[in-house]
Length: 243
Image 1 (cartoon, one colour):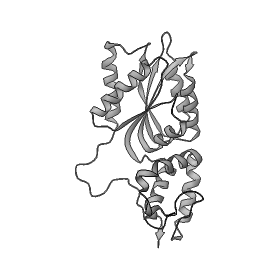
Image 2 (cartoon, one colour; image 1 turned 60 degrees about the vertical axis):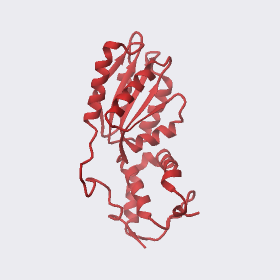
Image 3 (cartoon, helix red, strand yellow; image 1 turned 135 degrees about the horizontal axis):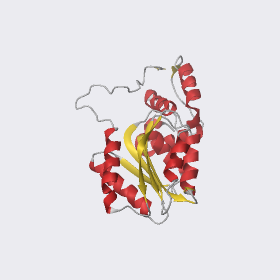
Image 4 (cartoon, rainbow, N blue to C red; image 1 turned 120 degrees about the horizontal axis):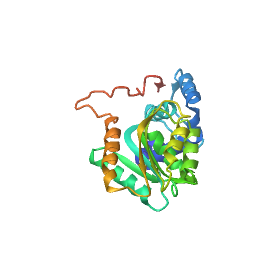
C-alpha cells in the first residue's frame, strides 16, 4: 500500500517512469504548471489512482516528476536504439557501445524490432545521450525505427544530444531521414557527423567509428572530483511544503 514499505527504486521506479513518460510525457509544460500550483499546498500524502501511496519522502517522488516534466535527463548515459535486418547495423551499434563503455560512459542498447517502444521512450527520458542506428529500407528508414522515432517525437523529447548511424547497400538515406524527423523536436543537439555504412562496417571505417565515439564522449559531462552539491540539480524542497 505504501511506497516506504517497498524498495521503490529497485522494483518500481522503472515502471513509474515508463508510465509517466508514455502517458503524459508529451505534456511537460502542463505538468510543470500544475506542479507550480501544487507548490503552494502543504502536501501530507500523495494517493495516486494506481501505484503506492506516498506518505514519506514525497519530495523525492516530486523531484522525479520535475525532471520528467522539464525533459531534464535523470542520468548521464547513452541509449543506443538500432534497427538491423541482417545484423550488420546491430554489429556497428555494439562496437560503438563497447567503445563508449571503455571510456567509462554508461551505455544501454535496444533492438527496436523486438523491444516495446514504451521501454525505449522511458530510457530516452532517463538518459542524456541518444544514438539511433538504422538500415535503409525502400529508400527510407527501416519500418520499426521509423515507427519508434515517430512515437518518440510525439512525446516531445528535448534537451538531448543525438548521434546517427545509417546503413544501406547502394544508397544509404536513413541518416538524413532520421535527422529530418528529429528536427521537429525542440532543443535537440544532433551531431553533424553521421556514420555511414554500406552493408557492413569495414576495417577502414573503424577510425570513423572511433571518431564518433570520441565526439559523443566529448559532449558527456564528467562529474566533478569533489562536489558538495550537483550544479543544476533540482531541489526537492524548493517548490513544495511537506508535513
